[in-house]
Image 1 (cartoon, rainbow, N blue to C red):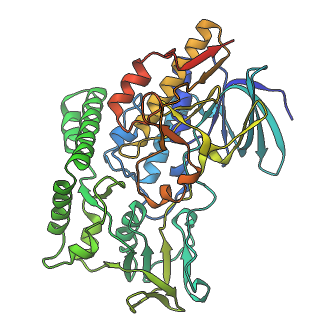
Image 2: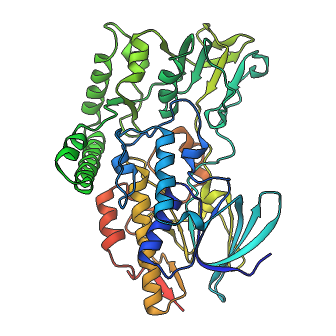
Image 3: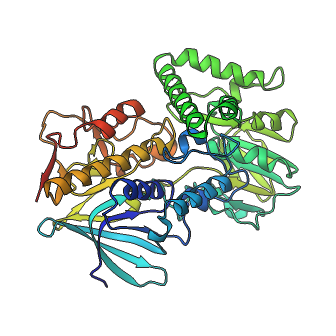
Amino acid sequence: MTDEIVDVLIVGAGLSGIGAACHLKRRCPTQRVAILEGRQSLGGTWDLFRYPGIRSDSDMYTLGYSFKPWAGEKAIADGPSILAYLRETAREQRVDGLIRYGHRVRRAAWSSSDAHWTVEVERDGGETLSLRTRFLLMCGGYYDYDQGHLPDFPGRERFKGRIVHPQQWRDDVDYRDKRVVVIGSGATAVTLVPELAKQAAHVTMLQRSPTYMISRPSVDGLARWLLRWAPQRIAHAITRWKNLLLGMVVFRLCRHRPQRVKRGLIHLVAKQLAPGYDVATHFTPRYNPWEQRLCLVPDGDFFNAIRDRRASVVTDRIESFTETGILLASGTELPADLVVSATGLKLSVLSGMELTVDGRRIEPAGLVNYKGVMFGGVPNLASVFGYTNASWTLKADLAAVFVCRVLAHMRRTGARQCVPRADDASMTVQPWVDFSSGYFQRSLDRLPKQGDKKPWKLNQNYLSDLVTLRFGAVDDGVMRFSA
């Protein structure tokens, strides 16, 4: 046990945590900051996932930090390149020395009389210790790092081959010259299929229902042209805003003209496949565009693999596993030597941490979002959660800046505690996100909520959040500051 106290304790050394530490160092240089990371290396998602072809599903001009322009050639970058970028950022900004590896946060208890959190931490090896912090900043992401979602497939114990979830991919997974079935139709499956098809005998993507897909060049043509004639920061800023605004326009069109966008997306897919391909069955989703994330296909690699007959798509339901493959509801059996279950994530709210405020247990499902950063009734705690319709880092940057502004205000006024208070009894509580992806739907009953009006409504709009979080009033009458 220890009596050590820090001003800001960041949980997580991934994209959000490293970015938050950099913002704090630049904007609040007198704050004592520590970062707790449960694993033995920084990088979060980009260090955890090791499956073939792992890459960004957003362009790096918006997924990269606002204060460090992405200098790589490809806008859609591979995982190792993103991890190198994170390591370089941490080293350049001198925040790598703040990270304490092998430290998993288990509990956090707020005391109003002392105006600090006492955080219980378990270190590798089982040793426990406690830290005190005046502000707790949760940057551990939104999913369980220990395991992904793996459905209970009937008969899986009979299968003689190997079943692996991408989250547990290891170097000993052999797919060379194998018959591979990838279960799923999301970003992970769409990434895996063309990469595995380079060496496998054949790859089949088995999906229950289709997902919207859109091809995009892995190299941004405008960025390449601008870098010839303009300084890097100017070229980066122009490209970043171009991609940001284009994404917002596409999202708005999807919400206001869903059928028109649906026809356009399906038409673009059909153009990349052989004439007569059954696009209606395999590439026509049952939901409207952007009710789930669009799957990005860099340089059309997924469609190229299908055209070359190295990969195929089957739309059906699993009846059971057999010794040599998967029996489908239609009666067809898919032969397989290796099955990759790209079946999604398990969500984890606040890194699975147990939370109490003045001895009262706080359940995440009972919390209401405040400005997409804090929660009503919970003092001196912020949680970073990125956009579902744009790059994660866009929101992570704004959230970190907002926390810096709150801390600066507290220092100027002598306040030791800040807590959002909801006094509007007429406010209607709604689900946290309007998103139909399976990993969200499976966890809706455990997720925080949002209100139907500002500042309790969770925006999915960068420009609105830019005004609110970077320039809006910190002492807005809802956030209560006290000594």
